[in-house]
Image 1: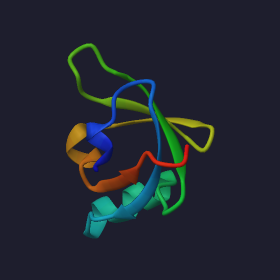
Image 2 (image 1 turned 90 degrees about the vertical axis):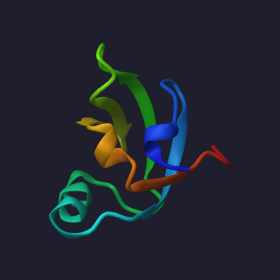
Image 3 (image 1 turned 45 degrees about the horizontal axis):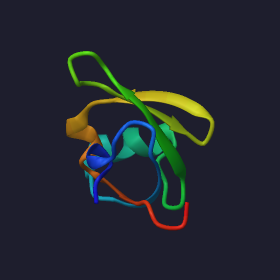
Length: 76
């Protein structure tokens, strides 16, 4: 399952990052790493971007970027 498929209010844990190049570096710099726990806060009024609470920090990323973050919802 990818991060862009999670609904607002749900929590998940990052499993893998499938992005490459500068996008991969950007997401890693923002704190996306395997095992990181995040909660989807909300979608913007026009759906994009997605607001995420990641390890206590609030971030906004596009759905096109969130599709490269593989997550799991089990065990939370």
